[in-house]
Length: 99
Image (tube, rainbow, N blue to C red; front, top):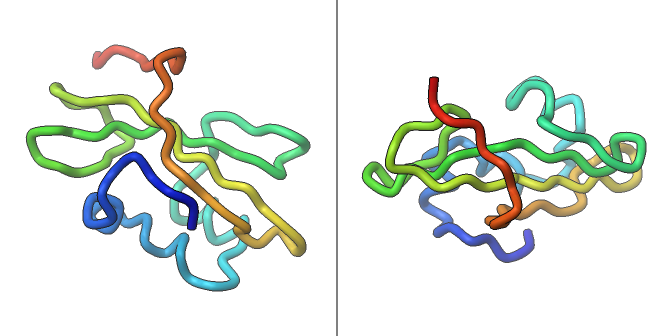
């Protein structure tokens, strides 16, 4: 796994620890996380918008204030198996406001 902007325990709370297991396929990711927010290079790279709630120290796909916006980036290698992943906090990343 590549370096992440959040501590590992926060990733575990959000159920992302499965990405570290060997042989995780794109189908498994889709079943666990749903459709990605964005897809690049014919689906070889996908991203999911996630929010980090500072108060509860956990990730979620639903924004609750106060929270920071991240992109979970996943790259698939041969056989559509997760090759690497990371959380990226990007000032240019547009997060939707809570409804």
